[in-house]
Length: 96
Image 1 (cartoon, rainbow, N blue to C red):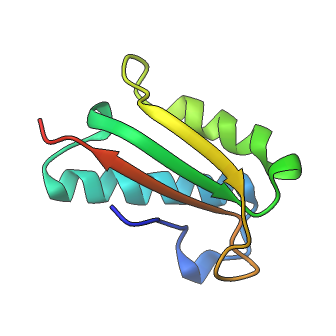
Image 2: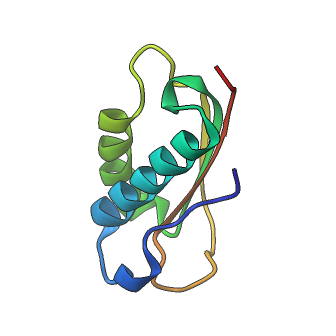
């Protein structure tokens, strides 16, 4: 799926809230496509400020990701489409 961000109506949230919203959106989109996070092959994560936000994002990620299939993940710092966005996540998942 393409990169996903939090609810654009709630851009005032911190990195924890934005990451939770983004991963919930990914759960919903994976279900709509007939798959789930257990089938994730790769993930790309972009953070507006990796030094400030990585630890909090990673805590949310570790609670969300399936414990027996985490797939391959890359996380980098990047200028995102809107200044209020703190995180964007893209996943590739297999179909079960």
